[in-house]
Image (cartoon, rainbow, N blue to C red; front, top):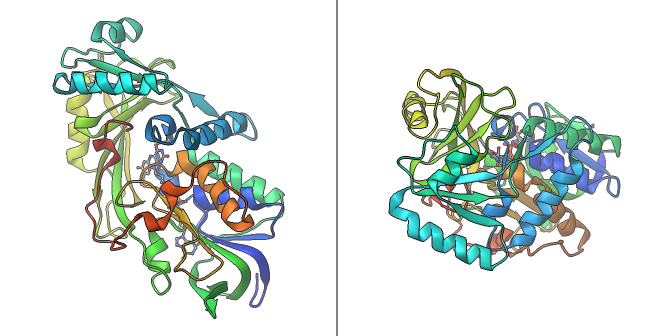
Length: 388
Ligand SMILES: Cc1cc2nc3c(=O)[nH]c(=O)nc-3n(C[C@H](O)[C@H](O)[C@H](O)COP(=O)(O)OP(=O)(O)OC[C@H]3O[C@@H](n4cnc5c(N)ncnc54)[C@H](O)[C@@H]3O)c2cc1C
């Protein structure tokens, strides 16, 4: 686009959230998406692809249901695939009773969760060796996908419906007149828009610095892929161990992906894109303690990436009252952006059309935070027991 061009909605950021929003808004709106680099080149490209919405949103099940319905329906369109797989949360002896009480509560609320004794787990999945554990909580309604394929498929759908995807085009600032956002400033000039959606991941608070304060800060999280002595079966479950701050899932080639160890990051630009040696060692020591045939496992890959954190680990998807009119923000996906993308896209659309979202929106509103400071204590989602 050139200086002075006009669209209905400008989207800043071509990660999974910007791409999902573009698809949700087209063809009803004339959309231009600006990505400073390549599509899906930020946190999205580094994600593990775990979908654990149901355990992550036990307080508002309709949010998880919306995401799961989308992934099931989208599975098989284009080259996108969604693999459904149960998850096991391994339970150390010290928290067995708490875990059992949680299972009873969730079951009474209608969730399909169950407590499995170690023998039950080992009978069903002989790779597990649960000598050091008191059992596992089984969650259904979980699975995995390839985040890059998801984002680029969503973007391709949006483009087919008329969206312009402007890659290698950073947005430098919003253009605001009389309290109303009227466009974005790019290196090639101003592009006017009735609405601007900022979905720029951890860059969002910096980009919006002059316009809106957001309690969002960067954090770094890591992944290691192990090649076991014998490949993992396709039916092997996903899982997580809250006390160890790790989660795991089988890869389609029989490897085991292990992620976790997330920490606030003060230098997101300079931070290493490899996993820390300490994390690799932790995984190499820990995995053979609960899975058989990993004593001689090889390391087939490792990486780290930066995502955006909020104080309560839930994202901010809102058109905040004290922001310029016409501005929608979608950031702070805190380790769950891939799985939350269908929800964020539906909410961005609702904020622009003025229609009701198909689920409660309170968990995503900015004014749930009294304090907007970025100096909050980072909480890792692997520390909780409701999801990885
Ligand atoms: C190692 C790792 C594992 C993860 N595992 C999972 C998982 O299993 N499941 C899950 O759901 N989530 C997972 N996540 C989290 C998930 O990747 C993120 O929450 C999600 O990708 C966020 O998407 P986004 O679009 O908000 O941000 P991003 O993907 O970071 O996209 C933001 C985009 O905005 C662009 N941008 C920034 N500033 C500008 C500007 N000024 N102008 C134009 N463009 C700009 C960036 O280049 C970037 O492409 C993981 C993350 C990491 C790092």
